[in-house]
Length: 459
Image 1 (spheres, rainbow, N blue to C red):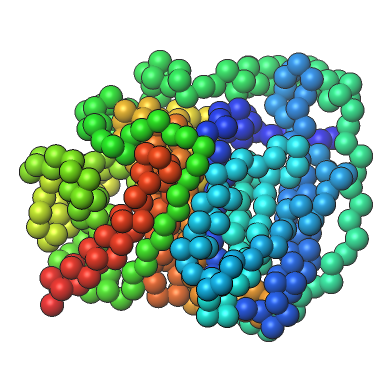
Image 2 (image 1 turned 90 degrees about the horizontal axis):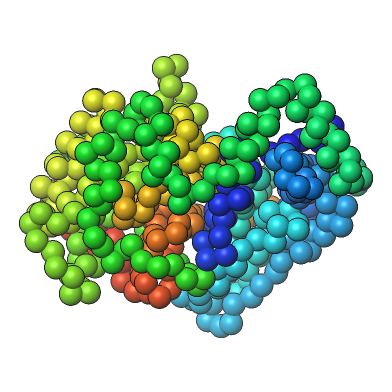
């Protein structure tokens, strides 16, 4: 019996548009492995059995009688999914980001398994990069972002298992898929309703469905619905992207938190707020005392047993870009975040699923799904923050030095900001529409400057 996509993941595929591909990207910077990028390619081949879905493609049921199914790709070609690339000398970060921007502008081929990895040589400092693209429908659970995570080990001496032979199962014919769908309907009549609901889900009808969403989402959105402030961040999105990155020391962020209160996440939001303020001013945009930018901020929270990662809350947060004093900005954001949490005004993951038809596979992807499902008039940008391991990780004996997330854009959203902490630093990945927010590199520089200014205020 084939494995069928859930209505949630199927709707995620249905909602994707050519101008807004929804794959989640990642940029991993590593020391050059002893065996070169060939060692990384061998490692991918050896680790694929750990993620069988990475050799499966989506097959549609004739007539859309049921959700699509996962089938083995009998023509699976690893060299299509794992490609080598090289930077011209001198191999600067700017050259790498130009490549990342072009790669993330291209949608994944739905006739093949929904992932790609590019092994990039020629990066200055005897380094290599792994650029990944993974469709969220491919990944189950909150713990896996993309193929890059499968490659990483805590032990630099971790052996590479031998790549075994793989024999794909013959995919079912169209007739077999139809009969299986009819059989499911006979055994579970509610599947007809689920399939119909998934097939007709469309973000353009989201507003009409808002009144049917109970609980936290409606309470959160009631005062803000259809009222996000106008912003150059909300723009018609084309097919080209620009990616920029920034960095911060985790110890610096902790010093700021210790001096002024709040949480590290509050400090990060303050950094983003200050950078957006200066960016708007650099564009000649009007910024007055009451000016705000509304962010959708998914946050991983603990369960009652203390386990992290399996519950997510998302907040609609008004970033006070009109406030010139960074310490006051931090105090206002800390108060706002604390108040939202205390009064239960967070958008719980189940509320987001009820609204958008999405089942978030990762926290970064949750931001993309939430942005896709909510009206663009509710917020101006998505800001995701995923805590990562604070110890070195290795791939093929090569230490990972940095890791940057690339969060996709939703329709009408010109900018997304992803943050990931790793081994004592926080890495910002900024993904922007090339025409609407083409100066995203300026914003990235302002993020680093804002961290420096806040460190000075901490004494």
